[in-house]
Image (cartoon, rainbow, N blue to C red; front, side, top):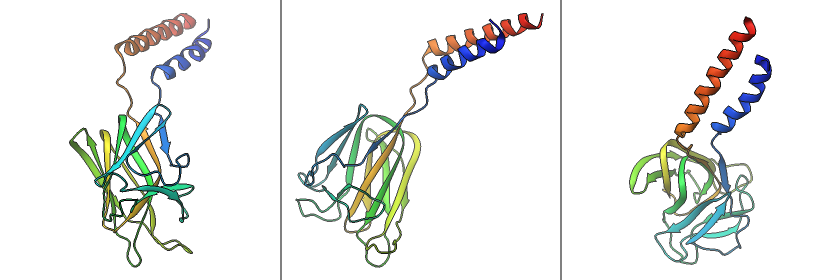
Length: 201
């Protein structure tokens, strides 16, 4: 086997051994309109549980009235009729990043939305973003993202009376490489080196 042929064989093996992080999207389009917190959605084996301090019914699924938030959205007030609530989203696996679309109930100046990430009850970090008014739409819309550390729970809060979210995209935390992966990598590299040396002789 030539060096080039060997490289073609071993590169896919190395790629499989160090698989990229996978992303998962939660968008509420498969939820029935009127579904309210607390509820759980599962996508690609990852579960997200949506809850609020007003239980039941702090946030509710309803059809969009926005431009960048499409299909169904999740917003307050829900059946509980309470304003100024936080939305908690807990995940069944550790994550390394989250991005989502949002809109706030503002008529003059957009107020910020904050995403705060936790690993269990330990604070990991947070980020804040404000939306902007789009032509032909009444409420400011925006996107917010957080990356850094490993977390399995986020709390969304806003200065506005109410807010809605959609298209929650999360990045699964990359698992730590197993010792066998390093052994395979070392064996492959030594084999390739020996083959290259032989081919030059």
